[in-house]
Amino acid sequence: MTDVPYATGSRIYNAGLVANETDVAWALRSLADRRTEYQLYHDYLRGNHRLAFASSEYRAAFAALLTGLHVNICPAVVGALTDRLKVEGFTALDGGEQAGQDAWALWEGARLGGTHNRVHKEAIASGDAYLLVWPDASGRARFYPHTGLTMTHEHDAEEPDVITKAAKLWKDGKRYRLNLYYPDRIEKYRTMADTSGATVAAFGRYDDGDGDDIRNDFGRVPVFHFPFDSDTHAHGTAELRDIVPIQDSLNKAMHDLMVACEVVAFPQRLIIGVEEPVNDDGSPAALFQAGITRIMTVANPEAKAVTFPAADIEKYQSVKTGLYQDIAAIKGIPIHYFHLGGDFPSGESLKVAESRLVSRVDDTQVDFGDVWADALAFALRVENGTETQLRTVWADAASRNERSEAETVAIMVRDVGISQKEGWRRLRFSGDEIATMEAEKEMETTTTAAAFGQAFDAG
Image (cartoon, rainbow, N blue to C red; front, top):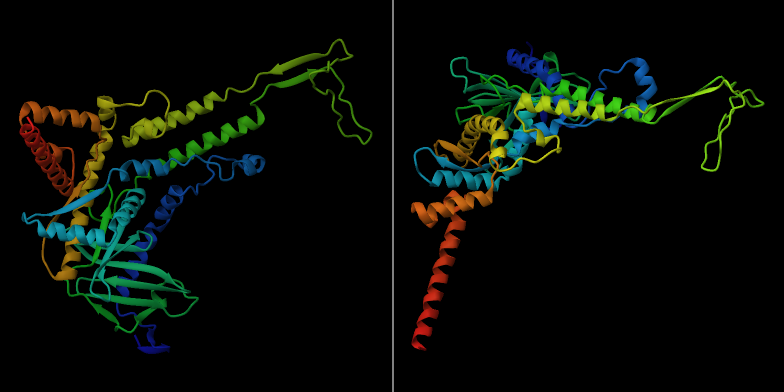
């Protein structure tokens, strides 16, 4: 290809020149292949649902009533998992405490508590989420979460946990930008004209003042992939994949319920054998005017009055409950997450009801925990050059019964002989909280001893 510079301001574009056509084409194709699927899950999570199972006549008659009417169960399905995925810290695999403390300090300094919630939500809802880690101008590690709509990757066939390259595509004003990430560099591209679409021919190398490429001296792609429910490191499986059809059915049940309430939720009355009166202009006139002080009469002795009972609205509710039960059976989510009827489980029954859900959360903690550990280890390397391996510490996925736990620990301290400090650990008090309680207990003991001495001296 011919290198034809095109200048605008202080930035130079090599119009028509793509030094890496193969990988640009790969990036655009990979992003396009899954875009429709990702967008569907994003829409359903946010309540932008299609109107399913409706004929054209049905739409024409009830469009105004049904537009925007839905019971969005998707956030509850995703939240059943994300609510129990809480990172509590990191430990170093070599047994040293400092690296784990440094990683947690970096986590809190970067405010990753909120970021990790968004990453988990995205990965579980759509199947994939990404985290880009790169130093800012001051050399501090920055964390940039991305969705599968803007980022993609390719992994090594022999080492599936190794990402060989990644790509990020986004809209910058009226043009598209594309970055390609490699273990040794980052290549930057931009479409040549405002009206250009995101096609291979439209992209040229982009210089924003730092040169065509950015050096990557870390020896690995700085992109971390969070696949949900995946047997490989290629792509995950969206939690909403099985839920979208049920969500459509649930919306249809709600639509039918509203139509029934509008049309047949009250008794229908029919009078046979009476000629319908008309007004002077030929329009139908009211045959009867109901009222507490009125008596309706019919002159024709052969006339008959028939009443059709109101529709049984409860049957539509039972359809909805059945769909909730289907979700619970498919995803292992206790039915009380969706339907509050009946007795709420507690104690051992709650533990049994949540066993499948807790097991799924535990599996997800293993998968996501490895990615978070790698990302924080990389961030530590960015900031201070240290090489370390980390393990992610998660909050317990099981529901807690604090009273029952406290009673159990009290028995173990009293009868089994474990120390009070160990009892505090089992109740999940932090190290700082334990230190504070020990200091307060020591002060209380000292105060009590002093008071006893004064009382003894006073006789």
